[in-house]
Image (cartoon, rainbow, N blue to C red):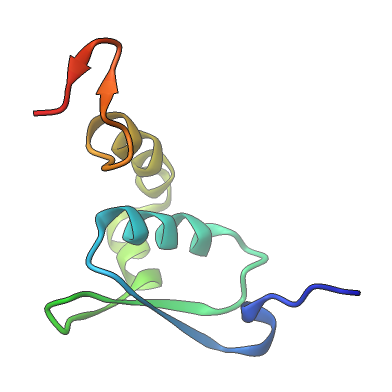
Length: 87
């Protein structure tokens, strides 16, 4: 059985989250040229962020670097880095 991906069926995909982790993951996924859908992120403040425009504003290289940087410095799922606590 072939798996189907939402991007094969829908032109636009809306993620609903106020979490920065989700925004960065949406940016990273949308960099992939094999992902044809346009991703939008609805934040809790009722703002809708168009991820491709955000990537254009930040730049491709910076978007690629942000995911790793965020995991190291501010990711909610990483509690401590080598005996240092998150402040």
